[in-house]
Image: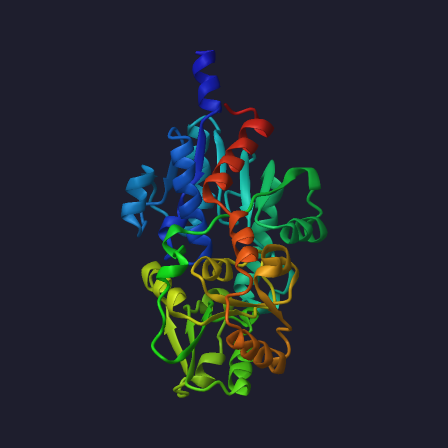
Length: 364
């Protein structure tokens, strides 16, 4: 019986509640690393509420669904009871939240924007995240994050011990990786692409103003991404430019559609005021697209010499850098782009996460 109990204690469960939400950057992170986790360690158990919407992915991961509640209620009420009945196995949370009173867990934190700039969020969402996430972090034996920048945020804003924070870089989804000689050219027009939720920190107002100042001939600015008023409040940027034929809001698109947009765009512009990482610029680089990113710490850390940096608060600088990028005959320096992309692998990310569980928590 002791041997059986020991094996149960060493069981690893992955919180798969991310399968109940449509795919954006963080959900894509969770899906891709989960696929690799399952390949490296097939014995992993993935658990989710019953309201999943990505059924083929759930089948691929062998997800176990249970409960009658949804969302945070499921995660905070039903999930901990389930875990206790399973003899308190190690839990891995991949997208910022988990049961706030469960001790045997590792949590991946992608950023602390809700603490650094709560005004970017709806009042209700900011209050909830400021209540929930620090408690999940303090209940976790280890925190994993995507960047040195977010590691520093965790130490500065929450006082979380440095020795308990591990940095594991993510990868680039295969659907966005395109051999350079097969890259598509988008008609004869110039396309500037922005992939962003419609929220204040994404700084779309300055991007649109910079695009207009640049006066690019036969150019269009295509903005991809939905909004979420419950989390980010109301965004006025779309309403201000909805009638401008040069600015197109496509809303939410599938990964296949997004891949096509990356492959056809001339420049991907990400002028966000705050990011824990920066998935869309990395995906664009993998697609062979020129990349313009805001000069913020996480972007400097991730992109180095493979992207062009811009002052996100200066629409004139945005205009100037757009013109500079479009005037260049190559997509940055090819060797620098390739060096950047080599740093990011979902397989290595999964292996790194499992190594942490094995080394720090003595799971074999």
